[in-house]
Image (tube, rainbow, N blue to C red; front, top):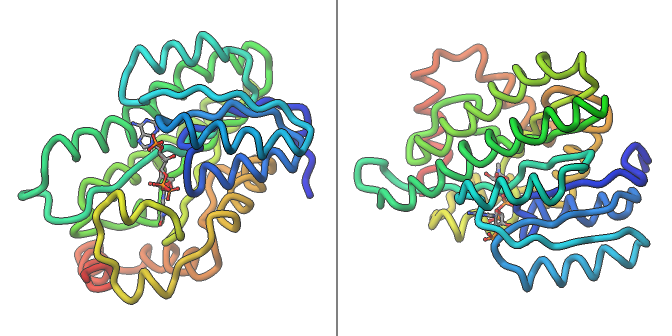
Length: 257
Ligand SMILES: NC(=O)c1ccc[n+]([C@@H]2O[C@H](COP(=O)([O-])OP(=O)(O)OC[C@H]3O[C@@H](n4cnc5c(N)ncnc54)[C@H](OP(=O)(O)O)[C@@H]3O)[C@@H](O)[C@H]2O)c1
């Protein structure tokens, strides 16, 4: 196992579940000290106790990332972290025109605003020390429009574009940015999004631990973006050759219940 992260300190958002919790376990095995962030403190405490069994320190910092003051407090409290994993995120499934605005607004606050704010606050602190690794978790939804996940997919296109640009901006200062694009992954995402799953999304799912490993390997190796899984990578590559209107129709067909 790669020991790039040994003795580094990593702050992981969305560590109470799914891919974020899997990243915490993986990083603990790689010898990284951890700061675990999400709203559900009880889950973070249980995960921290599990991670400490690998001989690392694990602190919990319960926070609602939609709150700008909570983000500023995190940065002040953990100013010396070497690795930032911007993983927290959620989807809202269904037609945008009839969606509950509060849910859509909360999604954009976490997927876009919180991720951007944490990145721009931590990056200069890392640059001043000449080292940093920042992961942004996007999605294969970033590569094409996705009807019934229109705003979610657009938020992930934003994340992919942001991360690839920031990697070029920050690399000369020793800070590398990697965007992880998971495809369907077995987590609580679908319950939170209130998605009735199609056969495709049931059959093509990867495990959170597989996805976490691929993302962390890419981060250690300074890859600006990575798609999790060979099939997902092939499909993301394939979208380059389809007209975007056709890609949207294909995405609709695979996702509609
Ligand atoms: N699962 C998939 O198929 C899939 C595919 C592509 C991309 N992704 C992306 O992968 C990332 C992780 O999702 P997941 O699949 O692991 O889903 P998950 O199991 O639902 O985990 C989402 C995490 O985000 C946290 N979170 C949500 N809102 C938050 C807020 N306001 N403040 C702080 N933390 C918040 C949740 O913690 P609390 O509820 O405790 O706050 C939870 O830890 C997301 O960015 C998602 O878009 C997932």
